Image 1 (tube, helix red, strand yellow):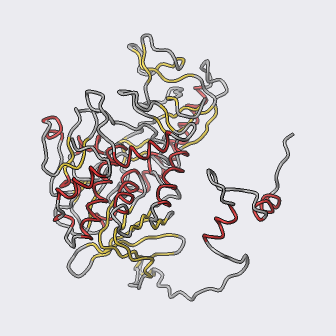
Image 2 (spheres, rainbow, N blue to C red):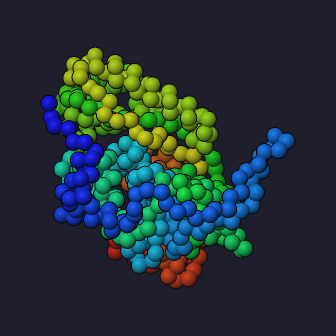
Length: 470
């Protein structure tokens, strides 16, 4: 029987400086002390004037109230997923003050908390990697971590990351960059100035409802929550919503063959079948998914039914049903050789929302553009091969048609529904995020509106930051 460490013994070890931060020689107690010097026990309360909602005649009214200003910043990035972290890092590298706000308690969005571990599309038809920049830097950091990433540099096979390693890498990069982060903080409204331009956003957290004032806002919320609140025109769409999981203690993977949509075979089997490589499973039939960097652990990408990601009642019921379905799938998987002792290692803490809002931008990128290989003077990057050959992405699809001082990044940019299914993918969110962050910083430094940014300067800085523009 292993020796168990009690909480008191653990705290005594910390006090003695016996625990260290991972990857450093910094005592954990020192790191905590640098964060805040606090004394345990009752605390003095600062009186707060509250204005609760009132109920009268079956109507609820919210009185006007003054919000405390949490922070004033240059660039405010709302959303800490792939697009948001790329936007925050790229903007900070130009020397502007950056604040990053994320609704969950970790960074990475669907690439980490959503367990969407596939980094694709990265390559063009010639197996050349066309998505580089900050996203490539993130993967290079994962290269150095044991069990951090697999299948690197093996085009057309795309890499698969470990979610926990990726959370660590993103936390490290944001802290190193001296970006001001706020986690567990949900953007709920926009702040508009007297000229109708965005001047920040309102957030809800355990600290209450607070405001962050900003020169430029990057909406990387995924759902376009801030630009919608600000009144920017958009198209609402519905799409499949799944829930991804990780299954442990398996040495097989799902394979696609001629006769079966999803077979199961050994990890080295290739004759007559190919690995699904994380392809979304439309129907769960005892599936075990695809390998991850962690030995014996697979990830299972559920496609899920079409649903409204903006309807709280609908997504609440859907998530509960997904969790029940995943457990039933596990029990069926245990009947297969190679998965008899499989266990549920993790279900994602957030559902896999694909699309919900699409911005009405200065330019709407379309599937017709992609298939035609349209070239844009304001190109900010490429997609990789997926439904279409690699195509250019213009800056103008990040800029609202009417709203000022805001840029969109990630899956909520301006595109038609058909092409948005590609633009939502993780590496392409890196592309739009990095461009939005740089453009926001240029807007501040050159004292111009985001729609007036010098595109040649934006492209030059993108190249300096390692992006591929051809």
